[in-house]
Length: 317
Image 1 (cartoon, one colour):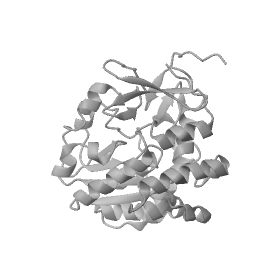
Image 2 (cartoon, rainbow, N blue to C red; image 1 turned 135 degrees about the horizontal axis):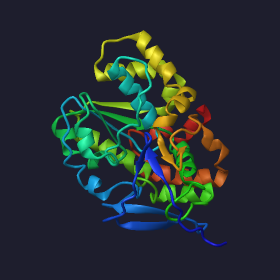
Image 3 (cartoon, rainbow, N blue to C red; image 1 turned 45 degrees about the vertical axis):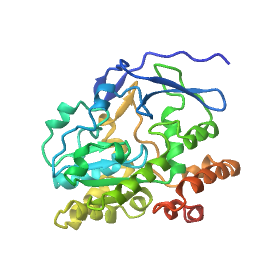
């Protein structure tokens, strides 16, 4: 089969066109078992989207945080946009759609982040060990999102599969992409390494206040999830507001309301797909599950997060 060549692609965030600046990037081509390829930039050993400007990435460690900032990080596709929307509504004290995409520290120019009023939500996908030094020094509150890695793998695959690309359009089967996911040669490397890094960070820095936002629990009881966020932020309890925010942040509502404010590839919003739990069952066969759990057991044995997504939990979905 003849390989597809790169295409002219328009990227935009919240309606603003982004230019692809590859200067200074170390581009690498990752090939799956079926021979299909994905192109990333390799920054300090981490696979990142070429859309990220390398000069912005270099400045992240030294980014100036404020004591009342909320540092919000999580592996891609773990519910970060959803959690941002809930948190920002709580801080705004109203259940109204936020008229912009979340500001990602890897993507948004830092002079723009510096102009945001306090309290800011500083978003990131990177490991906590790679976060701004000020997060630790100022003891900023941290929100960390979790989601079943099997659903994350499916969601990431769908972001790339048959999308316009300035390199080569990725047409790899999910079972072949899964091997890249398990090997850690996808966005931000392996999700399980991301978790172990977070675990070490919180062990080394017990003074850092942290809230774990688990995707499945938020789906099950969104009002309670919003209430927990409100308590963590330190707001006065307002159950009516939490109820209104949970309703406004339902997946079906957000998919419509946030359409103008997403990350778009050639006009198609890539952020909102299904927003459900257990879609992985439609994609994994028995062998894929065996491959997945072999890696899970190796990497997560002894982890505080192990039981959350251990194999026996599949029967509860």
